[in-house]
Length: 301
Length: 225
Ligand SMILES: Nc1ncnc2c1ncn2[C@@H]1O[C@H](COP(=O)(O)OP(=O)(O)OP(=O)(O)O)[C@@H](O)[C@H]1O
Ligand SMILES: [Mg+2]
Image 1 (cartoon, rainbow over the protein chains, first blue to last red):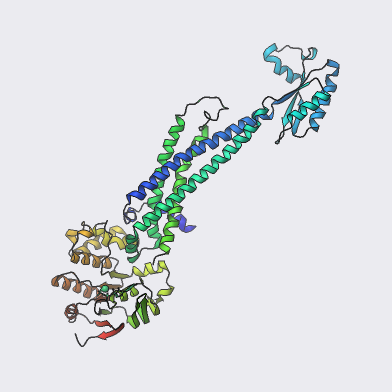
Image 2 (cartoon, each protein chain N blue to C red):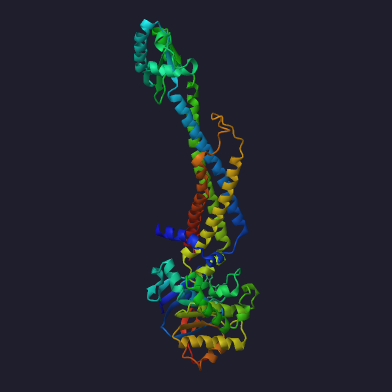
């Protein structure tokens, strides 16, 4: 581990002489640069997708949480009994986390925008509202409706936002897929950089041999390659990230929060997440090249 | 410095060197001769750890080569300057940088070394060729550059494989004088050559042992020179 740290710090010490001992090989350089750039570009999108679907899932979940209402219309003298009955039924329904009758003050507050502050709620035939909170799995809406119909004909279950439940699940799934895509992208980047590094090592067998003969350690030789590839991957990924961010920045934006297409993008601090892509690409290149170099050097005397 | 004890070396084609014992004490001067293909280069490769004996023991600086790990070999090579028969340069770097390469590889102070480098380039007569690339050099120039590179770390031991193979008589005498001078400073020198006139020319200036590889064995030669 200490070795890795030293080798990693070496990257920034910038021994230009050590860089020159390995002749530049145009094709592996371009391959690394292109791979890192393309992968960073894709990673930015996967990140945007993941963060956006995460945002969507949590928005929708919040909207779902307190959204179902039970409305009880009954003659004033039966109201209290029916409300109590409804609360009992709800408490017996699996999937209902909490049911709470709104107080007259809360009801008045709800009606205020329409009727003004002086509405005498108590003296009007206003239905009693019960707020229903679902638990994680949700309740069986049709079953509950049937039971209410049978026992409390005056109760109406209003759960029009429940159709979003599968969407919340889908959004959650999408978020996981986004993270999986990011992992795969970095994995593929590592694999390609390993291939490029192997090609460079093979092309420079003669150079490695000469360095060996004059007393270069494996760490020195590997370092020359590792520095090259890490810096290239860093540069390529930075370029890919910038292009990716620009592409997202210029995506047509609409504030319709429910739309996955227009919601794709970064918000607030999330704009900093893509900045992690280039250093991560550098890290991947560092380990991929070091691994490839140590393996090749270990096979030579 | 370097010690061989019943060393043998075989490869796919059979045994090339057999039962060789030799000590290179500090400050000694050896010539190694033998017909082409006898195994002089192979012998030197054994001495700097590029090959491992297939039998017997070879000690570099008091350690058996088989027990030295790869980093250890690298460290040992910094104390052994080698002039390779085929020179072995990095063709994409200018001559001066090639000569300075052992400094870079061993992480030595570059500024301090610049003076050494200039002096060394002067010594081998390559000052005007410092910025040329190895493929542009003549055979003799390459050999002088190889010698300069072998000496830049001021090694304890210098192993030279046909160092005068491609240079004219005057230059070969200069290179020889340089090696003799290094020996006087206490360095251990071994020169593999098939050029007997070089050995004769050295005789008046240095106390040298002449070894010959013949019939896969190491023999002391001398009287017949
Ligand atoms: N690993 C190996 N595989 C195949 N052949 C080998 C191997 N090692 C040595 N040889 C052979 O051993 C012989 C000796 O080679 P070496 O280079 O040591 O001779 P040399 O005395 O230096 O000759 P020269 O004077 O021409 O430089 C050569 O024929 C070479 O091909
Ligand atoms: Mg030879």
